[in-house]
Length: 563
Ligand SMILES: [Ca+2]
Ligand SMILES: [Ca+2]
Ligand SMILES: [Ca+2]
Image (cartoon, rainbow, N blue to C red; front, side, top):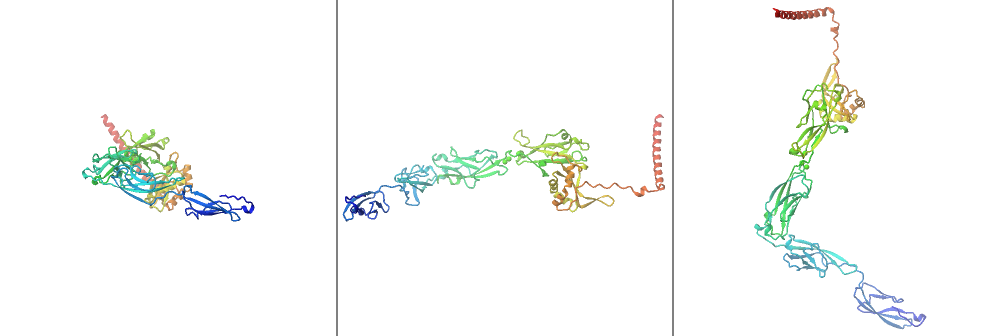
């Protein structure tokens, strides 16, 4: 406020003060004595009114009064509305009339279960909106959001639980339920996602209004996620596949429990659940896989069959047996072996048994031309043999070498017998392969041989001779002892690698021992002519006698014809 004084100088200096405030507002305002600015000292509520009487006094004590009418206007909105209780519980009967009041909250909003309930915006009253008998649910949670009219608009959310008490009861013979309590069904393992597995018909469904709430549900005891159930348009329970990766080989049976849900009392308690055993049936979803029991560790040689033939092999010897496995059952898992890219030489020398995978020779190997060696061809394994379609095929390479004397290598192990070594033979060969980079094959295990005093070949069953051969992994050809790769391997100390692997001393890799040629007996060579001559003469005499007799018989026989 401002007051004026027509005097000048000190006489015109005015001091302001509050003389009176109406409505008990005396302590709510202050005034600056020099400037006349009126300030409020505390919180004011919109709509409050005050009459403030201001006094202006000059230096000589002369004064004047003025009245300021104050009206508190609404300010910016700072506080949201508050619910008056933390939780509200509102009981309502299912027969509640539409628009009947459930409860009243003092605020405005709307809820999640808005199909069945709504809130009156002005009163906050929650009302029933639709027939509660349409649902089997007996509990609804409504989020009520309350807005105020402020600026900005503030709001608060309250969760409200409404319990619906259903009171329907029907005699059991018209109760809703499954026609049967146990079902068995089959579904193929390669069925696509969404496949209808089975429809479970419901009894007495026509006895009740089509609006009666009805729900099919898989219980917790059912394997979750693999199947789902839903109500069909005909109001039956349908089971569907919820995956496209059933696997007969992993899990071939499922047990599902389907629960029927409706208004309490409408369901026949004896028929509210049905168990469905679902059997997964096999499909031909696995291809045969060749197995390689004597798998080489050399990269190029992996997943190939290496075998040896010898010149001594009789006709019909099992040179090699290939084998494939198939995870399917029945015909889908049955395997037929077939020739694949067989060369003329392969056809000339070998046959393949379609059932067993045995490869045997139909010719001996005494005179194999070296240019056809090694024999290289492939075999296939095909499942579901009698079906023109729906089959899988796997293929494997076969390399058959002719093992000859120049290929044989021997490692002597003095302290381990043949049986012990047989158990460790794969590890033994692996040590050689790792050191040499060549494919190692085991020909045989024999007792350890050594040369006796007279150069004779002696044997010792406490030790073992390991007979082996080496194969070039790139060409598949067996290598002779004199070849550079084998010499290099021997020089690189493969026997040390073997010794370390077996933890037993071993000899160097060498050629098989040969007994020395029997020496010419000294006493025979030095025998005096006197002792040797009579024997020789006697032998000659015997020979003459035999020849003469034979000649005599011949002549007699010949002469006989002319008589
Ligand atoms: Ca499968
Ligand atoms: Ca299968
Ligand atoms: Ca198969």
